[in-house]
Image (cartoon, rainbow over all chains, first blue to last red; front, side, top):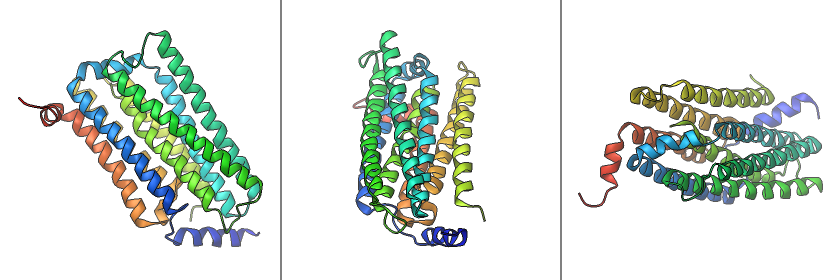
Length: 199
Length: 102
């Protein structure tokens, strides 16, 4: 496929106004974001009622783990966007490579999170330490579950792509998994500053 | 016109830079000064909204896709940081709104 036809194809995709993936995944994404939204409202209310505890809380957390996971998730979002871009151009192998990289980035996120929980445990921080850590564990563990669910989706589209289920013309499944993965990244974009940065 | 590849790379680097800026702002703000903390919080919330818009428009690619979905997604990333900011600036109002009885 020459460069000109690739550019025309990209331009057509941009102008289409179509739904990336399918409507079902967007209903799921809105439901998930609503759930996270409720957690954020709970955070705001709990923080207003317990300003000292919420001011001290982030100082006990490992900010470096939070930064590392933010960089990992942003990079994984970039990887999956590259996978979608590649499949739109009919580059199945390249798309496969980017999906695999996204999956491994998700795995790296899980490893950092487990290590962070382990370090918290060594410092004597638990779910019932105080209201800040209760909210922290609810938010971050819930997010971790979403990351793992997203990784299952990535594994599924990796296998489907391996068996040539996706092409430049038909790739709704891959786009749907990518949109879900971006949602996981978007939720973390809010979680990271409120828990680790804003003391 | 910028190629898709270049746009994705610039967005990715922009997101990493914005994350670094928000951490730097928070780490260098005077923890004992309430005003300094609030101003930093407002900046950090602004950066959150900006990062959300970058992901929505350029990584998901909603800028040129379905308008209604884009609007809902962008609203989420404008309203939530605004609520977080208001919660930081007016904590007493939040307490009075969410307390039972007097």
